[in-house]
Image 1 (cartoon, rainbow, N blue to C red):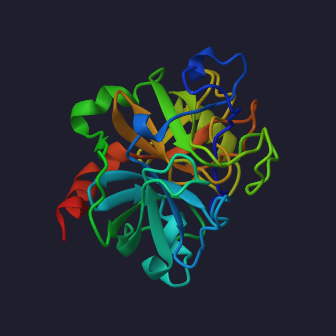
Image 2: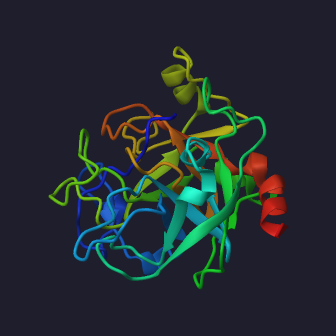
Image 3: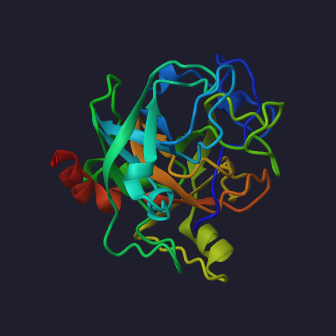
Length: 274
């Protein structure tokens, strides 16, 4: 399973811009500004008043009223499959009861995804038991090819770790996972991800993946543990899904995202299915 991923984030006023941050961290944001961003949790998880659910393990994106796009590795290793997953939407503060929590009825994962030796085809489409009343995000297809160009500014979102080595479940700064955070990144050269990962068992493929980091030279990750499956957004479109390489390092190698453009047709087909 891919190393679970989350945003390098420091709680700061939501009115500030991640680009204005004096250091390479993300910033707390309002769910109202990113209503399509959701998180996954186990069906058996109980919301204790005053505390966030303790088993949030991935993020995702609402791409239709009853469809969520996330990473395949967020779903593949679930013992009971979708029977053990819920989606929480409209809740930027995990300590609150805002928004809606709905059950996952079924899931689709690319047949070629094996979940073991590589990270190829790392995406999943979840079908929910009911429609959600939040605005979905549009996926980037062939008409948005320019958004994949090196240098494109993008935003990655999630509720994951907020510092290198941070604990998933702490409510203490600067490792909080209570609030939704964003980090500003940019699309970088594929060769930077190839150099970082192809010397290991994990392989980076340009046709299936997208490479992004805080800096043009590939330094500063932006995504950290427990941001897995979360959105990479550019120009108002979903261009990537957090896949692997997110170690929450301010000077670490770039993060690899599943390239939405490659799968746009099959994703749209799944959205149109019952």
